[in-house]
Image 1 (cartoon, rainbow, N blue to C red):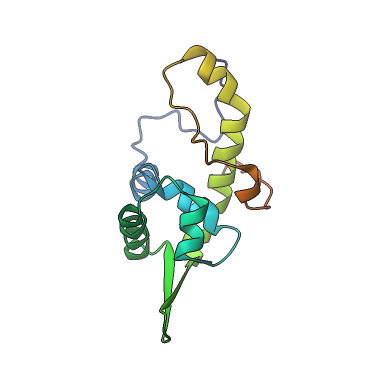
Image 2: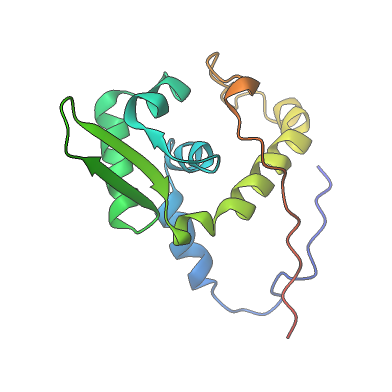
Amino acid sequence: MNVQRSSGASTSNEYPESLQSTLELISGKWKGILLYHLISGTKRFNEIRRLCPDITQRMLTLQLRDMERAGLVHRKVYPQAPRKVEYSLTDCGRGLETALLNIKSWGETYRQELFREHPGLPELPASASPAAEPQAEPKQISPARS
């Protein structure tokens, strides 16, 4: 695989603490997918669950709570019966939109090549469908200038 290094990448021995802490916040099987689905707007719990049918109710609850504690997701509970709870991205969570869309775009570009070179990679779940994707287009990240 021919991957070119971005001109924004560090060539020094610096340790990218901000990169590590960001990856820790969004790591795991579900957080990136959940954040991705919230890019298109506020969603109710069961709506998110329908978008990710392979996630258990317990795991969805845990992942949303983790992201709420981290300040990435806002949870709004309405005082009514039956209980209505909505989830949306905070400003901090919305700041990940460009990165998530670029990661998705990278996966679309290199997916076939990755599977050819690494046949043991997990396949996409059968439930993954283009209809569930947000309509936002990927934004290009410009290297930071000093």
